[in-house]
Image 1 (spheres, rainbow, N blue to C red):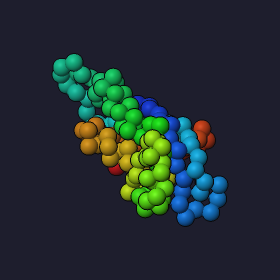
Image 2 (spheres, helix red, strand yellow):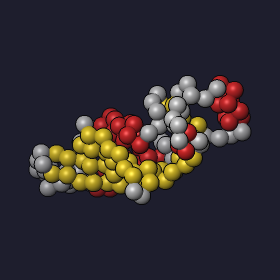
Image 3 (spheres, one colour):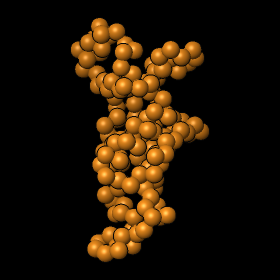
Image 4 (tube, rainbow, N blue to C red):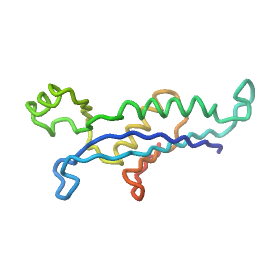
Length: 139
């Protein structure tokens, strides 16, 4: 198996509903994303001969996936009152409702699925919530 690893990041706020600890409060992170792309054989011809894929293309696609989550308030659908969402939108805040609890584990799976949908041979996505805490999802 051959692989390359591309890194991206995004800054976003979130909170954990139904959690009894400090993370139940709105807070933010600089989320670091590391995507591992893997193939059984390197490409045999063309510009990408002897490569998994071009690093610049992989980096661009990872950056796009991160940009979708950058500088927004990530929240699980149904965890905020409609009036709260309307008030925040009325103030011009960027909100991203997601169909899952916004844990690092679920964000790793979400990014993995976004990269897979773009055709990348993604094998694993790691998401660092802090410099010392990391979650991953493998396909």
